Amino acid sequence: MRYDVIGLGLSVVDCLIRLKDPTVVFQGKGGQFRPDRILPKKSRQILDWSIQGGGLTATAMAAVGRLGGKAAMITKVGDDEWGRFIISNFTEYHVDTSHVFVDKSLTTWVTFILIGKDGSNQWVRPETLTDFDLPDDISRAANWVMSHQRTPMERMQLSTYSQDELDIVTDGKILNLGNADDTFLEAARIARKHDIPTCLDMEAGLVRAIRICGRSCRTSRTASPRGGRPWPSPTRRTRGPCAGPSWPTAPRWPG
Image (cartoon, rainbow, N blue to C red; front, side):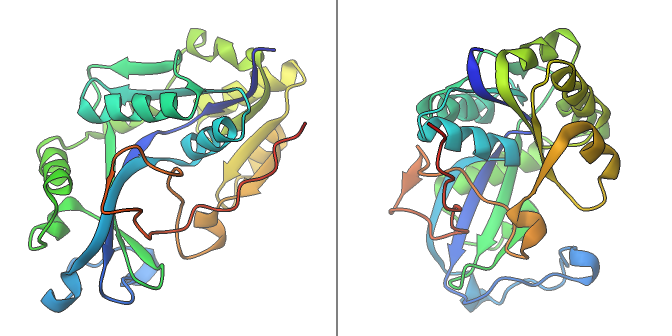
């Protein structure tokens, strides 16, 4: 087989902003961000920041490549600056990008994460950052997202793949999924027919998916209130590493 691991999932760009405020966990009921609970001005001071690749499966594939394994990623990005940034990051970590599909009808997913000195973090909408003294790159990313609002159809397209696009699944020793949508479970069925183990970065309650995949792993986002993890060592960075959510200790690559 050509690859040790093949990933199928969402690839995003994470804009991480570390604040002077000791904690930025200010979630409302049900974990939803409350726009009325904006940080006071004195707590908006930025210590450092970074822009890097993110996404559950994307992070896993970057880890495989960093550990010397052969990894490939099946994902979709927009035909824009941020899509090219994601492809560049994959290339840096030796992840095969021949199945990263660039779709002109889509916009690449860009997220914004506020991080406290204690490591707590909060995903926020770009509108929340309007009154922050943002670095130029973060400000440009926020303005771009606000002017490129995704539609529900776009969100669906990001997780939809044709049979031909899933054919590469049989070229890997392991399949890693970052979602349990129907298309992703179809990939798991293909893998199962060829006795290829599938690992699902799961959220709670995905019983149907577990039966198909056979293996699951709880992500940090599920197991801890601190949220997901960005890719290691971003290509694009200023003022040193952003002391955001620490990337988990990498598993030892077999062999």
